[in-house]
Image 1 (cartoon, rainbow, N blue to C red):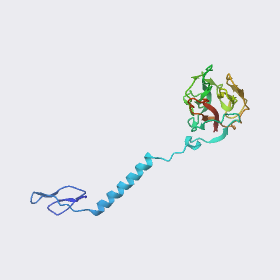
Image 2 (image 1 turned 45 degrees about the vertical axis):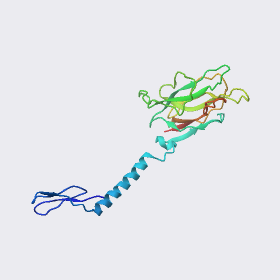
Image 3 (image 1 turned 135 degrees about the horizontal axis):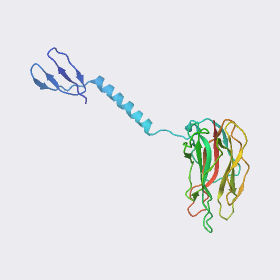
Image 4 (image 1 turned 120 degrees about the vertical axis):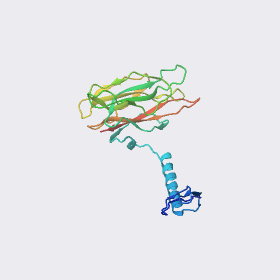
Length: 249
């Protein structure tokens, strides 16, 4: 129970507290009177309820990743038709606002001989802003498979950004070893338009499919999501199967 104690002065003025001691200045005697302060009790109870509800809301947010999470204006989603169908799509990842992809590197597992091949395991995009600014935008990666090594980064010419891609995929091998996606190639262009230039090499397996659509003018690739198959244990691992890129203003 909450108690009210009062400090009484010789002119009989009183101050109320949730708890304390009653001092009688005239007699010099110390007393404490326990009596419920219902107004204070109700006020503190309401504060406790609001505090609990507020804390629960902060510690257990209902988070559903969407392209709005990045606070970017997406002008187009680039996709191709020849990607693998195994696995699930990752959470989208984006460059910071006003930054766009200017280069990339790949995580590729080399041929394993009689072992299980997975080929492409991850794609990393390098983010950049403007034509003269240093490359301080860092890099993004949607999800990473556990096998392979990173290639050296390939970069667009000064001022250009990634705006289009195509995917190299090995078709299903039946009872053989499947790898699915093996390499990705891009086209670079100025954000405001102009001629395209190729960027990328080729993997050791599979064929390239058709080019994706191109980012509209005044936009370039700014984010991505990948379709990644989990470890299969004794089954056939394929790692990265497909990818989609987001164009942003």
